Image (cartoon, rainbow, N blue to C red; front, side):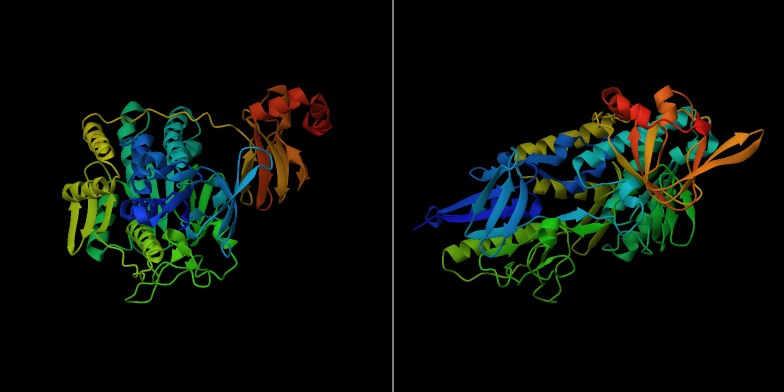
Length: 527
């Protein structure tokens, strides 16, 4: 008998649970080989990541190495280039230029999850802080500290308020948890910034829905709403996002919030690899039967956020939730083993223990079976549930000990420098916004990609327009080349998009390309 090859695409909760169930349930006589392809060699516990913002947890507590929990599984920590579901063939890119490898399987499990897609909201892609990866959360924590530092020294009152205003887009699980953790972190940190009054700090949650945590019952959702308001969080519910710029977010009702910090927890999109499959998706997900199989593709299964597996009772697809991902991954594994053994498959019925949300060190909400809890009892239940799903006792003990330690010795202001490179950054501005102001220190170089701007200067107390610039034109080089303050104000005439380059990167270009300095020489009226 030839050994059967099982290939799992994706190292998220659904893919890992599928692999672990195969390891647990397989018999020696099954003769299967398990391979997993994952961009990262870790399973990420997204439900715990908001606690990185407040310093309750560190990165190592939410990342679990796949090789630690999947013994005997061949793991490729590589990018997937293409998927051929008909032949169950997957092509991966390796390190070298044009270097690739093809994997074939008898059973293919697609567990690629979802991606962030903010394209529905103009400007959000360019200016929002995302909350998808571990790097996003570390960067978010560093950003909060940077805003406090900048606000503590700025003399411009309007800019100070922008630095102290934080807008969270979305009031679901992630939005509520991130808003609460960020609010607790910022307010606790103010003891180190006596020059900033607590009343200056604004944390605002925005959502088009009229309530928070829509999957919780009304009573718990209202308790969370009251708790957030009591802790100083402003909620603007029932209003959507119209657009975002470098200095503000504009809501659908026309109101404008001046801010330098937009935190996006919205915009779930279809994984591009899933979107490229030769089938009609069901609201962005792969249509499956109740056994997690993809009709028309023998041996192909789909689980997790990228799968639309119908509930046998209602016929409607299960929601994109962690407990559902666990259940689908495990059932797909059992059905693969059943097929190997010549047995009939069983329908997927994920166990639903309940729903939990942690809002701070001592406050949570939990909806377990028919029991609704809030406050510290819910916090304990939430933590116990997370601990129960940790894959090893060592992981459970480490997480529990750190939770206890962080409650006794909280860490508020330690940043985690990432050494992020300053590269070309796309930026978007609304009409009549100042991109640079006369007299400011020069920091970036700009190239206009769309829209129109005007260059103006104060002459004898009156504003004089010097010129207008459009797509393909550039500005900002005068101050950078001469290390001078801005000699003019550049203000948008229409909605405008630009590419910006930081001072150090611009300096490196000019240093290595001397001709560039001559080519970028300013016109006489701007010297």
